[in-house]
Every structure is written in C-alpha cells, then in structure tokens.
Image 1 (spheres, rainbow, N blue to C red):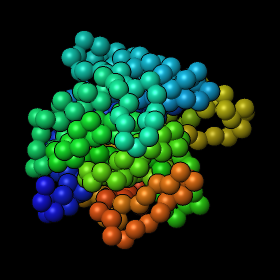
Image 2 (cartoon, rainbow, N blue to C red):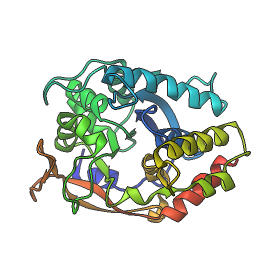
Image 3 (cartoon, rainbow, N blue to C red):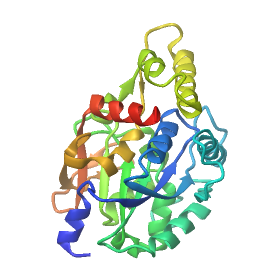
Amino acid sequence: MTQSIYLKNLEAPTRIVDAVLDTDAYNEIDDQFAIAYLLKNQDRIRIRGFCATPFFNEKSISPADGMEKSYHEIKKVLEFAGYAHRNFPVCRGSSSYLADENTPAASEAADFLVEISKNYTSNTPLYILAIGAITNVASAFLKCPDMKERTVVVWLGGHSLHHCDTVEFNMKQDIAAARVIFGCGVPLVQLPCVGVIELLNTTRYELEHWLVGKNPLADYLAHNTIELAESYAAGLPWSRTIWDVSAVAWLVNDGQRFLSYRTIPAPIPEYNGQYTVDRDRHPISYVYHINRDALLADLFQKLDS
C-alpha cells in the first residue's frame, strides 16, 4: 500500500463500502443499536458478516460464555429486524483473550476475517468495525499480517489521549490484542470512549418519544435500554451512552457530519493502563469530537423506517 492510499484509507469513506461487525453484543445495550444502525444503512454499507467477540463481566461467567451469548444476541437482533433468514454470516469468536502479542487465539471469526479479506485491495478495502475486545481482529492479523494491505479497522476502544488513563472495558479485556492492532500498521480509526464518544447518550424520554411503538426492532431496543438503565439507576435520573453506534457512523460520516477527526502517530497502549506516545510511529485517525444531536437524529429517523 502506498503512503497516499494509506492516508486516504484513514479518511471516512464517501462511497459504498463493505463491512464486517465484530461485537460483544450481549455485554451492553449499545451493540444492538449498532447492529440495527448498520442494517438501516445498507444503501451505503454492504454487510459481509458479523463476528461475536469474548467478554467477561457480571453478565458472563467467562470470556467464552460472553462470546456465546453475544453470538445468540446477534441472531436475536437480526430476527427482530426481519433478517432472520437473510444469509449474513454470523461467526463465533475466540473463547479466550490473546495469551501474548505473537500467538493468535483460534476462532471461526478470525479465520473468516482472513478469508474474506482476500477479496479486497488497498483501493477497495474491507472495513472491520470492532466494538468489543479486539481479540478476533488481532488474531486475524497475527495469522495473516498482509491483511493490513486490504482492510481498515474502526475500533471503539481506549479513552481519549487527554484522559488520566486508558483503562477502558474493550481495551483492558485484551491489552495484548490492542497492542497488536495499534502496532501492526493497518489503517486504524480510533473512537475513544471517555472524553469523546461518552457524549453519545440518550434518555428514557427520547427513547419513548422516538422509538416505542414504531416497529418490533425499535421496541426491543427502547425497552431493553430502559429496563437496563432503570435497574442501575435505582429510581434516580439517568442517561445511557450508546457508544457502539459511532463505529457504524464512521462509514456514513460525509463531511465529518457526525465525527470530527485528525491523524496522529499511533499511540502505544501499555499494560499499566497508560499510553506511550512515539512521534515517529505510523499515523492513525483519531476521533476527537462527536456531534451527538446529529447522529441521534439520523439513528432515530432510520430506526423509525
């Protein structure tokens, strides 16, 4: 890949592109919104498949359990959206995180990413939207390093550079995988959580006004979000951040209408929860601002269709 093409691939696309979504769909309520938003943008995005990624918290008993639950949640959202019988590949991801920065974690998802990437070039790359721990994607690059020549990775992971640390859920689950992605030289778009994407929040009033009663998918998203938020809020006011929608928004970000970005040297995620900055590293795209109102307006309007 030439330097000019590499830099071009760091810009938000303005044409129809192909994409795969790698998601820990059962972990939170925002992954479901991202799947739905992807489905509602098929005039701009050709969906090539979904991959379930591992996660481990109070909603799973192990990374493998989190991955399996996410696999079934992807299928559940597709069913609500009326795509239960559409032939989208849905792949199981790895059952564990990377053991180190050199050894891939075996999975159907990693193999799928390697194989499907062979259909693309640096001029027409495959976009890999990653909205969970980036284990599957890093494993694919470890298995096939030249994938970087024909893919672009868009990852919701880590916090903003000005934040006090980068101990963020997607990143801290698999720091080794994050280091592979930030270091391998693939065109990378980072969507930082705290300090940037955290502004993409919504409320019960908005969900009830814009989504409830519109269609089965909109009802599922709204009621699922409200139920979860109420359980955490315990009677207090609340808002919920739907982080993962931002990764899909990158692919329809004409004129930076949703996401503002610049190129920076690829930071190095360290095991101590900090970034190291090396000004001589290859560039990545770094999103530094989100237009919350514009993106939510587009999301809600499309979910109503």
